Image (cartoon, rainbow, N blue to C red; front, side, top):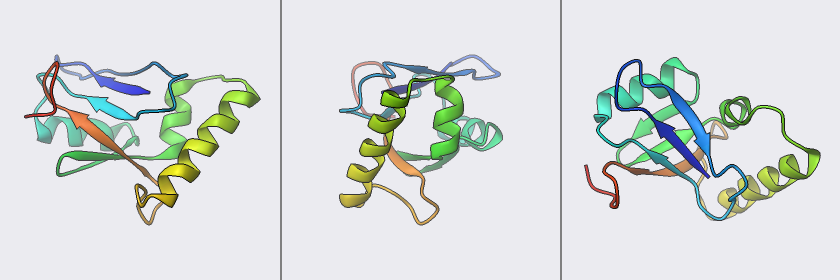
Length: 107
């Protein structure tokens, strides 16, 4: 599952690979850290902390739109898995790796 933040302002956000529950990342190609954090906060999607974004579950569901009950179950399982591995925050948000440039994880 990938959350993609467009490089050009207003930094539109969209969800790609919504059925891939094996990975969770934010693609922020050509988007600086401050702009990414502001975009996530403004859209109530989450926040940036270092090289990770913490994504609000309700924000993720809103981004995904209407999905089947099976999809919702798989999302819940992904969130439980993340929690079991310490990849969630106290507010329930889920940690996602930020990919800063196409093809790598560097800023």
